[in-house]
Length: 167
Image 1 (tube, rainbow, N blue to C red):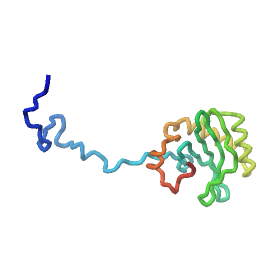
Image 2 (cartoon, helix red, strand yellow):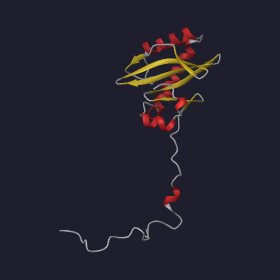
Image 3 (cartoon, rainbow, N blue to C red):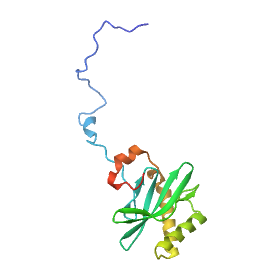
Image 4 (cartoon, rainbow, N blue to C red):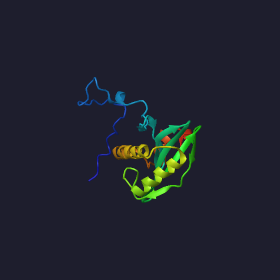
C-alpha cells in the first residue's frame, strides 16, 4: 500500500496551534541562552583539581606551599600521590602508590606510606594526617559520581587550560 503522493506537501510556514500549551508558557523562552558548565566540587574551600583520569584534594598550606593529594584511575587500579604547589607550579615529591581501591576505601599499607611521605616533607602530627584521610574518604564516597575520571570533552568544557594540572 502506497501513501497519497498527489497532495502538496504541508507548508512549514503554517501556524500550528497546540492545545496543550498555554498562552503564558512559551517553551522556547524558557531555554537558557547558554548551558552552564557543570559545577566543580569544593573541598576545604578549594576547588577540586579535575584531571582527565583523576582529581586532587587540598590538604594544607604551610609556608606559602599548598599540599594536595591526588588520585588517578588507571585500568583496574588507583594511583595516589602527594603534590605540593608553590607559585602555581605543581611538584610531585613521591612515587605514585598503586592500589585496587581509591582513597575512599581504607588501606593500612597505602595510608601508612602516605603518612610517612608527608611527614618526611613537612612537620605534621600523624593524627592530623589520619583525620584528613578520614575526611577525604567521606568526601569521595559522597561525591564519587561528580569526580573524575572524566572524558577529555568534559575537561575541555569545564576547565581553563591554564588550570589543568596533569593530563
